[in-house]
Length: 338
Ligand SMILES: Nc1ncnc2c1ncn2[C@@H]1O[C@H](COP(=O)(O)OP(=O)(O)OP(=O)(O)O)[C@@H](O)[C@H]1O
Image (cartoon, rainbow, N blue to C red; front, top):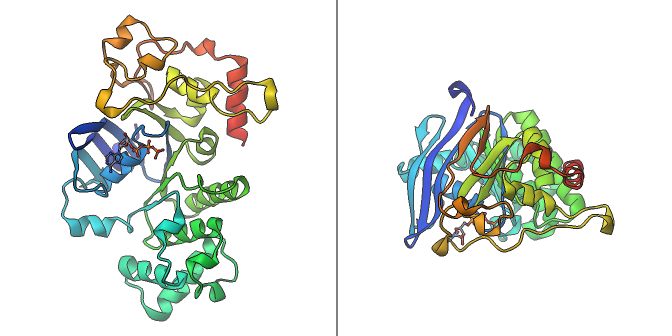
């Protein structure tokens, strides 16, 4: 975990339930200033809910407990006005489908200018000039003309760039990018990843990158948290985790990366599916799918414990370090290089 002095976000014991069904079981997570952290795991593991809960964006039926401090200020249960001031300002979030977040009946320029007015008090010509600068910064060509276009006049990749421009309007300390490239084709995905990397270098903002794609995470992030069934099960720097994944689930995610090397290497999907939060198995939630599970794994829930500086693991029978096969290493290297 990061030193207190550089801590931007401190999440402790974050729990979420919908209609009495618990989907998040006590997340502890720190983000340091300027750091890029990836959250990976299969669909339904709780990656999005973690951040929607942290930012007070879940629907009213959700019950949320724990503590979320951003720059030392408690976020959970804070008055609505305080939340709104921080959201979109010091903390911004972008989503998978930019077209659903952009207003189709307002020009792009007006939407960015509005964000600048709310978060930085800019109006008129000053807002326009700053909007041009932001559009240019995210790689939109011919910004003066395009300022007056509507969202449908931009491609999917450009709409994601524009969403990022709007997110930057509040000069955020933290950008949460929830599957920002999933809806885009491979070439555009790579361009958006490059953009996120260069913007972080330029602005110094911290980034949380939520993704199924371990390769993309390795490009954008320094640290990764692997989530399963509403819990963090493994955490480490990209270098450590990719060289030595200890949780059988993390290892399974690596084995399930499609190989670009054709049929010579088989993709090995993780057997079974993420459990329904209403019917979580006893003990370790991953144990019914785990090839290493022993009897004890179905009895006791392994706590998330530190196994080294910045490294955490929740597993009774971790993969021995030496057990990573050459084939898995090859997949990992391919994933990182992509
Ligand atoms: N509004 C909601 N009402 C009820 N259950 C919800 C709601 N939002 C999320 N959930 C449940 O919470 C759990 C975690 O969902 P979440 O969206 O965080 O998963 P995820 O890991 O982000 O998956 P994906 O990659 O598909 O977005 C899932 O079981 C999901 O069905």
